[in-house]
Amino acid sequence: MSPGDVLQSPSVRRATLDNGLKVVVQEIHTAPLASVWCWYRVGSKDEAPGLTGASHWVEHMNFKGTTNIPRERMKGIVERFGGTWNGYTWIDQTTYFETVSSVALDEMLFLEAERLASCTYEPAEVEAERTVIISELQGGENDPDQLLEIEVTAAAFRAHPYRHPTIGWRGDLETMTRDDLYGHYRRYYRPNNASLVIVGDVDTDEAIRLVERRFGALEAGPDPKRVRTAEPAQLGERRVKIEKEGTTAYLKSAWHAPAVVEADFVPMLVLDAILTGAKGLNIWCSFRGAAPQRKARLYRALVETGLASSVSGAMLPTEHPFVYGISATANEGVPLADVEGALAVEIDRVGQNGVTPEEVERAKRQLRARTVFENDSVTNIAHQLGYFQTVASIEVFASLGREIAGVTADQVADTARRRLTSSARTVGWFLPVKP
Image (cartoon, rainbow, N blue to C red; front, side, top):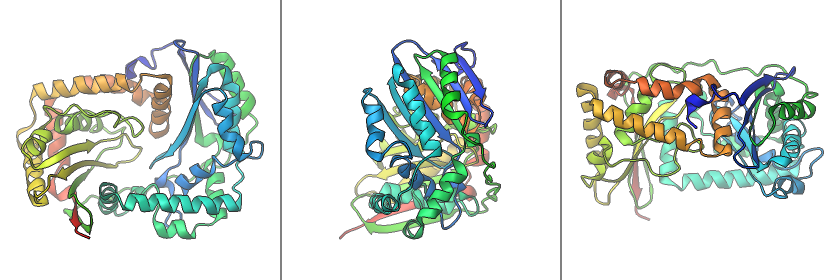
């Protein structure tokens, strides 16, 4: 199924409960399965200094038991139906899902209603999870590529809270209290700040009836305050250099990118496909499988010439303008200055000379294939619906295929010329130091 099939499908229905909970149901009867996703409009961009990492920590706590479901039973509710479950937090959203036999739909709705309204936040569990999350942060700090990503993003933003890593800053993780976390949970986990998506072998009317029974009595709360900060224009190149024990050198370049609803977003998707190969359209499944890179410009300029062992790009749909990043891993003995220079030459060439119609058509084919690949199961279809409902709307998701098909070489070149300038670039180097 492609994005354009979504709103034309008679099996997709949307409803809103009296308490503000948005509900999306799509019937797909190819297998006796149902995927249930509950989405919240809260991520690391909604955190103030002192509370960075709260959304991710809250996500962890919401697997630790509720008033009516002891911790040890939470996994069992899903697993006794042979299902899978998980959750994640990123900059704009937090989500939880279960994909199970469709006969277990009501039990999954009970679980998500409990998670929304009745998590307990036992002090001992909070302290135990503090240790787990700080250990997770330390693991990221020991990954040079991940560490450089965090530092470059923080340098690219001066005002907007997208500068905070989703896991949070260590000082905040060490001092946040149980009441801080519980207050964050109660502020954002409200029906009017949530979307429930159900996809699979279900009857729509029955599914909505079950949602009303499980969620209808939950009270709406005040609409959470939203981020209003607009990142000021970057007036000059910014640079980050990390020298740390390691074996490999890494380069990252980042430019400010459009939000998913902006006109430049789809041309930037096509541009990234031309430069580094087409990826998917979201953080959940964008990087499943390698991007087709044999004819990608930066693969030929960096990898085939022996400067780098790998190169990749990341252009993701976000609610506010985020960053477009290009990463390269230098081959042993190759100075990062050489890798950066070759990258800059290719970026300048696109800005000055544009791209060819053949490159654009190839990128479009690759992107169409990726969008179909991302809708290859009830789990992934439900994810796409909920992800776009959270950062924009299902209409934006449904229009992507048509917009990708309409992009021209002139649009791609104009977007590159305006956005990928040296004055708007943030460059990061990771230089390995011997023990």
